[in-house]
Image (cartoon, rainbow, N blue to C red; front, side, top):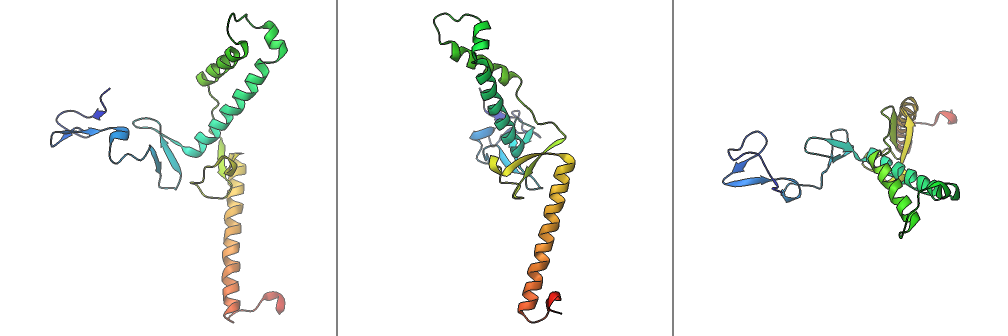
Length: 176
């Protein structure tokens, strides 16, 4: 496959410059692994030439896929299912069942609904470790986020008041 883009005459979407064709993907010197940070601080993953996906949603969808895979394989390997299943001649029956379950999940993987948000527990939009992500309904996510912002403002005010007290410019209200 040719990893060059554009036409021989150049143009809006690439082409030749000085007789050299533009390199696509990993062959391009500016390629950064298909990962970039958008203007709001979220990590995006390139999923095609013109599309991208939020990394935190991809991480949670991967976890949902792995959980569904484990649950479906565990169910498929129960004795009830094995008794009603087809006969597999000359091959490991459980491996065939696991492969079949994985193939079915790969065709229709779990997807997070649009009204479900992925919350960053520590507030860092680039920290996409599974332990830092939480699935929340939209109104709950909004309430949690607003509460965290209010708490941050209160901490800032408390820090400012502590600095003023240390400089001798303010007294504690409970001392009055």
